[in-house]
Amino acid sequence: MIGAAATTPPLRPTPTVWGAAAHLAQRTRTRRGPTVLQIQVTDRCNYSCVHCYETHGDKEEISLALIDRVLGEVAGLGTLFLMLTGGEIFMRRDADDILRAARRHKYAVKILTTGHFIDERRADLIHDLGAIQVDMSFYAGDPAIHDHITQIRGSWRRTLDAARRLRARGVTVTLKSPILAANGDDLHEVVRIARELGCNFAFDPFINAREDGNQEPTELRASAEALRVIYADPELGGFDVVAAEHRERLAGLRVDEKAADHGICGAGWDVGSVTPQGIVQSCHMLPIPCGDLRTQSFAEIWRDSPAMRRIREFTWADIDDCRVCEVRPYCNRCHSKALLEDGEWDRPSLDACRHALLKRDLFRERGVIPESETALPPPLARLQTDRSRPAALRVLR
Image 1 (cartoon, one colour):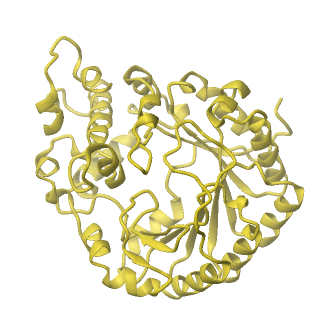
Image 2: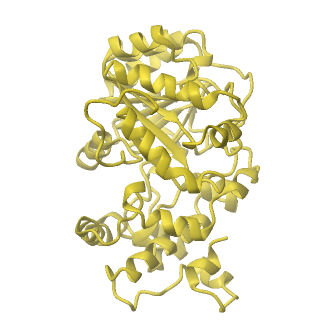
């Protein structure tokens, strides 16, 4: 047993997007302000996770006073949700004061952390401030696998101890696991532990290149065979392709969400981001500067930045291949992934093509869509040369 069971363990995994924020974004999209403000408060981290997309270091950090100013400005634009991340946010000595400022401005706050620095005192603070949920990186049910990924001995125990402290106080906690070759066989144990502690859980199959363009993290991705199993496993929160709810979701998604004239993601629309140096971006993972908060207001950047407007107004139709792609309804393309892996943010993302094809083929194999849906995304059709294996396995490396 990991610890005392929570009173109401979750019955299903937590979505990878903030549910309430996503709902509001769908209903009230506006250029006045983002639905979710992301602030990366530091680049520093005490862990060295093998797959991390960030380049850590002791770099310049904006002051608490500037953070407080920005929180006030963006709250005035109607933004309700705040995501605080790093690095590891509690590497900052004033991290607790940042949390207090966020709640003073009446944000609903999500913290992304390893949990390493959440002791009893800090767990009390998080509870007492209220309206805060905590997402913690948790890589495996096996301590050896988790500690290998973080490169820190004892990190598995530190994360679970923090989760237990927060859950004992009624704080919402999600254990988040990227899907790697190293942990793909251990994900059911993550689910078991999360349920035992009363935590939510979420899995992310998209491993990204580092923000400096280094491709090493992509070499740690799970295999196509492993992803196929995970996507089809309802307990792991993948695509339960035989469920009626997904048939309904798919029907709506194919007609509306992925139409050629629709935006590709919420960057620059639903989401706005601030780097530790005070640079505004459309998303914390997309390293395209849109303005500098040390000389401009957030509202000015959000409203007038040419880079922000370009990203905000970008649609599927702006990419020749995506405009005509028959696999687009299954695609979760990311501007950052396209930039860091394929060289341009406004062109196709090969990894997104591969995942979309895998999911489409799973739908077809389970009878959710017609047998006739076999087309390849145009970029993969051009790359496809080996006809000896099933398509989804040929193109997923």
